[in-house]
Amino acid sequence: MNRLLLAIILSLCTYTTALAQWVPVTNPQNKALHSVFFINSTTGFTCGDTATVLKSTNGGSSWFSINSGIPSSVNLTDIAFLDLNTGYCTGGLGSISGKIYKSTNGGVNWVQKYDTNGTGFRTLFFVNANTGWVVGAGGVIKYTSNGGDSWLPRDVNISSLTDVYALSEDTVFVSGFGSGGSIVKSTNGGVNWAFTSVPGDFADFKFVMFVNSSTGYAGGLKFGGNGIMGKTTNKGLNWTTLTGYVSATPYEAANVTDDLVYVVRTDDTVSVTTDGGITWSKQYAQTGGFDKSISVKNGLGVTAGRNLAINTTVGIHILSSEIPGDFSLKQNYPNPFNPSTSIEFSVPQKSFVKLIVYNVLGQEVKTLLNEVKEPASYKVDFSAISLPSGVYFYKLEAEGFIETKRMILVK
Image 1: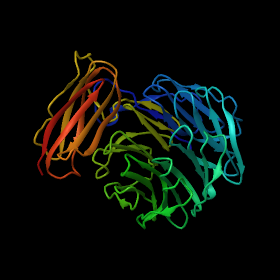
Image 2 (image 1 turned 90 degrees about the horizontal axis):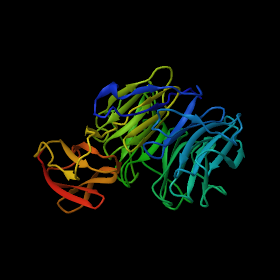
Image 3 (image 1 turned 60 degrees about the horizontal axis):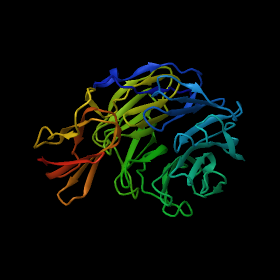
């Protein structure tokens, strides 16, 4: 396993662009870290070699070790939490033994829930408190329906599996490679699998993820050695190559909105798209290794590797940290627009905020915000590059406040 970087993104109160968003933080264990997962903008976990499990309770500014119950001989590959108490991590002794651990007290103690010989586990995904999957080398899939107390096999015809993502208990995607890159889909909880249509230039896939029930991204390596990204807009039925993505291999992605997606890459960089994958730009460059994992929660983004960095401006512009007197939603500017516009709003108290764009039929076309926000005035950039000309409406909902405004897209 390559040694990685750990980066966490912490805000400077106002939005700035490019490299200034990322501030280094010390990795206290100096171990290779392979996965990071944040529950919210303050509490997160990362795991890695020699049973390393670290926890942060201040948005990644500092970390402390919590690995009671895991032998130091175990290298951990992935970690995820369902809430502040319940979490899982996977790992093993190289590729010869796969292990699954569970914590019910916020990572303080870990109990082994599964052990197998002959393969190592790579990634895990839980869709709810009971239902989860793990995948690994040798085409191994394990499935639980009782919160990890027991694990059953799920067979799929791919020689090596790299990632798993579930939209529901029934709809599951798994990526991997054999003679080429493959993504399979199940609509009955992994009992049966069907190969999706992927471009033939994928040599393997490193990850698969979805930003909503229809739209997903997958990344990996193409034949010839360069990185490649794919996208689906029809629930994984088929995938197309994102020609705007070039160069290094993408290892994992996380999204803020349907169109705002961050990717960690093997050239030590974090790249971002704001238009659904059409164009990509470099946001940050690490040194001494490369990132393999990224998590985004409530404006906080985190990547996993050898070093640490912090920033909370992943897609949300904080215009002022002064506490507003009331909720408010302003008219977008410019209006009419093509293809991008900005929407400003104010939140006077900590609230769960939703900002959604609808067409004239009342159908939801974009979710711009769906998370808890602290008191402040914000600006969100909206790219309508994939939408046709016409009249659209955007609605802000927060703590009983609801307001809708009209905007016009002219192409």
